[in-house]
Length: 569
Ligand code: ADP
Ligand code: MG
Image 1 (cartoon, rainbow, N blue to C red):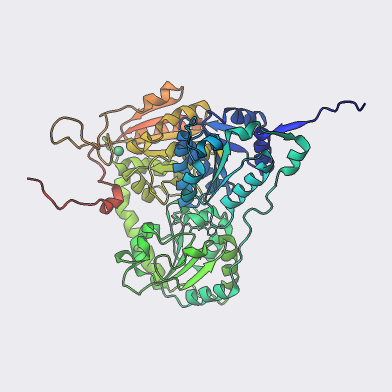
Image 2: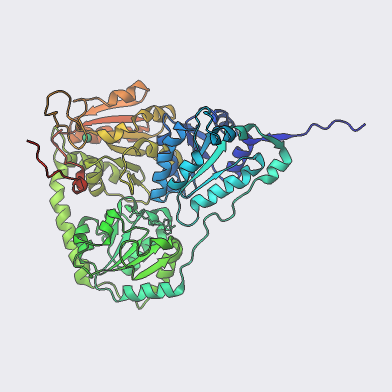
């Protein structure tokens, strides 16, 4: 009789963890609960960093921005039905912004869900996720976990990056299989985001157009920041001598103080340019769809668009020279042509941008230097501009209405991927999720500049920031409300619809969890408090009292508010 051999077993829990580790996933952002509580515990025990949040949307936003910062998919782990739906908002936002992310969610039993027999947290999650993300997969057998994780990773980062949903029903986790067979079933994804080389003919076409330009402009978008082709992009701008305009999250690819920056002359640059190179920027609403008043005379513009997604071309206007490929490869191909025979752009164009920019900067300067109380947005942001100039490697997270619009223009950025904000949807609620992931992924100090309203969407995560002792300094621009703090209810019954408790002290929230809270009323106090907080590395929240009358409705995009033409008698 043969001696009994004890068979080594593995199971769904361990296979998921092994598959993630094999593919270099080092961090999971999530909220524990049925059926993924033990998965989180085991992942932590196996050396994966598990960051537990208070709400899934914030964990999802953290995963999304981790994807943007690292070019690896950020992973968010949620429970079934409501937890999944909370995370789904972030997954959809990640997809819209072209950030690679994987939402892994536990789900209920297929047999019961599909017959709609009323399971615990019953929901057909795969069907719901599908239209809101780039790809969605479900794994039913432990032996397929390796291939499922591999597909999710490749789908998230290849081509145009985006969000992927991976559905793992509760039963999967405890399915067992032979350990050796399990190990063999895992897949390491080789070259997950392959280079996409542009065709030589497309490069020729673009270079010919650029050479004939009288008033060329390069628009840098967050696709260029994502690509991590920083040196090549800088070389292209500097060797070509073409003025550049960074979109919000592309700020810092080249310093905002660079002589070729057209940032402070945006309107002139867009209106008067003749050939525009779009480098990882879409002609969506943020660029007025490439037409209309913003872009000057109809027919005055020709576009060269560099994008990894072929379908992006001609999405709003005709693209004269489409350059499909990854930004690193395309920029290197262009650089080869910026050779000895290259003519710098005409000096009258470069000069007109430069003088416009200097005039605008000079006009703004005195507003940033007032040491007034109460503070307005400009005087408060003048202090924060100084803080970032002194700490160029800090990461700035920014959301709000006026707080966003004005900070974007006022605070200069000096290094790539240091400005993280509301992105393509202009969505509120990304603040604390982004701040947590920025600190976790980079280890750099983080400054989150938040409107009081924007902060409210993710404010409970200050507990997360304190719990993990992250080097995050939050500044709340507290003007007592959404846009402004002045609305009243015409009937006299309630507070106005856009106002909050007057004189609220958000700094006390931080103290409740052992962080540092500070209340400031002048730009000098603000500068000192933020500098001290960032030097200490301690989780800190600074409540900055802003004049409730400061700010404008919807910030820069008030024109998007529909107006009633009917006056009720
Ligand atoms: P912004 O809001 O800064 O203008 P968008 O999000 O509109 O930027 O555009 C980013 C674009 O960059 C998307 O169209 C996306 O397909 C593209 N993109 C992302 N990564 C790469 C890459 N590595 N190479 C080329 N294009 C990329
Ligand atoms: Mg406000």
